[in-house]
Length: 194
Image (cartoon, rainbow, N blue to C red; front, side, top):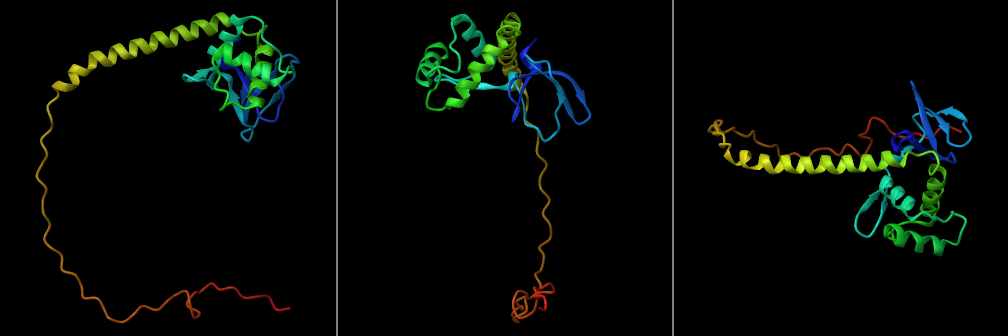
């Protein structure tokens, strides 16, 4: 199972694996219980691959966070003291403690414990290495493309045609009637007769 196949749904406890699609949304299976149900367009569904956590250096993608937690080994449960949980995450992933709420920390640790047995961590590592290689290739392509961009000659711009000057019609000196006052509006409020 990969991170792109797992979703969190607002208002539903636990994590869910995408099983299929329906015309109105997704068909998901709850991890652990195996209960299947469908979502609708009104449900707020978050794919775990798109989630990131605030750290002091940068926003860290969830796949990197899960890999770092796996490397640590002994990860506390979300039921422990919140101060200890914050200290653990500050040491493990360099968490930005001021920007991350307590509920988010508990959610992250719960997710890790639910996924540690079913998630393929080797694919997380491969995905991360693949993204880094793609980024390096893109940078190399950008560097190679820069000299070509400098050699392009600018296009000649055609001269603008000037239009004949327009003559303005004289404005009348009579003031305009105010449409908002004195019954000028066609739709007005009339109270019902009692």
